[in-house]
Length: 47
Image (cartoon, rainbow, N blue to C red; front, top):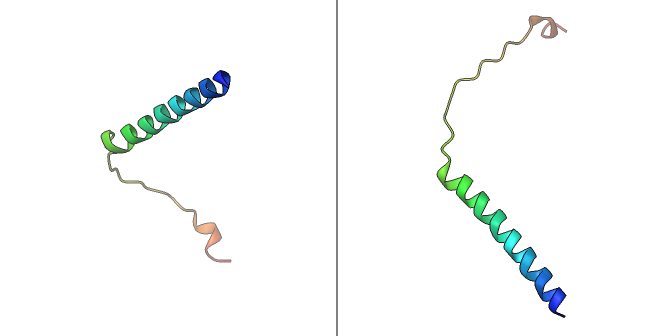
């Protein structure tokens, strides 16, 4: 039984670290806005 408890504790710690990383990225990282230009060839429009 101690190995099962240890496994559950390790999985809980890894899940907590993953949740903390996602939470930190979602709240502290501010993505910058920029303009995107996509050029489309005219060959496909006439068909």
